[in-house]
Amino acid sequence: MLFLAIFMLVTGLVEHQRNRKGLWGYLSILVSLFILFVSIQGFLGRTIAE
Image (cartoon, rainbow, N blue to C red; front, top):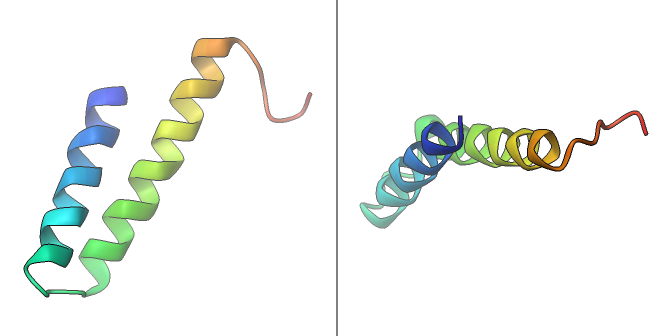
C-alpha cells in the first residue's frame, strides 16, 4: 500500500508539472495522501477511533 501511495503521489505531481491540472492530478494526490495516512496509522497500530 505504501508503494501504491508513493506511485500515485508521483503521478499526481507529474501531472501538475505538465500543467495538466485536471481531475486526475488532484484525485491521485488526494488518494495517495489518504493511503499514506492509513498506512502510517496501520504501521503505528492505532486506529482513527482512538
